[in-house]
Image 1: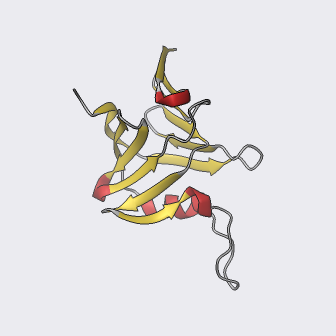
Image 2 (image 1 turned 135 degrees about the vertical axis):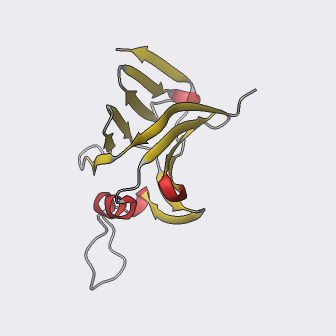
Length: 139
């Protein structure tokens, strides 16, 4: 039995990242018609070391520095590194974006009752519904 599902394996650049302040939903947009939205906890790691977590967005940790703008910081950190894979860990339904240079953003399943994430690739839509089941739609 396969332990992961691959939804994307190619190379593309992230073009936009932002969080809606009213809903706390994160939006990730890439070239090649890839759109992703989520409200779950996520973190960015580089070669296994945690660099950013979504819970730090808009927080202020040092008095003489501005609040953390995670969207801007992540875009700067990823820079021109391309997204090379999107995979789902079957056992947990966590979703992983893999970038060049071993940078990963992992989105953690956080609800057994509600949608966890919504991924559009070309004309296909994957929705992680409550409990980690995946609903697939051809648009």
